[in-house]
Image (cartoon, rainbow, N blue to C red):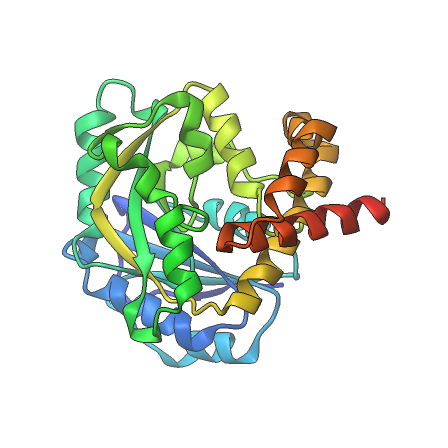
Length: 301
């Protein structure tokens, strides 16, 4: 599909480029962009929005709206978020790129903090540093008990597990699990050198696989909790369990193309998962859903 450039200002060399994949969420995307417009360094930012498949409402958004920063809108054939991000990175002009989701609302100083982090900790080897920001649920949507549990337990947002590493680098052995492309920045050259896989179509493990490759290349993740954002995604228990089934199916698929994931499907790990799934707890029912997804994918091999 042909690109739809919509530039409202002329920033020939932005400091930071924000890449946002989107799919049929025009109203939420609009709110996301409005939060970017009030960034403290909006004059140093460009935004690349990549629509994963055609959507009339999203297209109309960029035909009618004007922005305080350059916004470049592209459409690709329906694929997946990783492919959309890769396409967006090709358009990046900034020295650094920030990946966020279309349902991520940044606090006004987030972009400034990301750049400050790279300037401070990436000055010696800037190509080896990624900055991870903090994300929590958007309270305006109403936070359900399962959303509270997902955040508290670390099943959705694992930030409670890395509180001790605030304002410092994560241990390399755990950092891949926190490669949250909903809120992470890195040098553009690094993003171009390590694109997302195009053969992972289901949600759940593509970020971690990408994080593993970054780790293996010597990249370190610096956790900066002062770079705060909210996630505008309401979840019921039913939706959360459906998501876990998808993650289970995705694990089986990614293990076919990324051997390092095969160890998660060994018989003894599945036995432990089965035993824990019988617990009458929130974690128990989520493990049961994960196991259903795994078994379904294995049957369909």
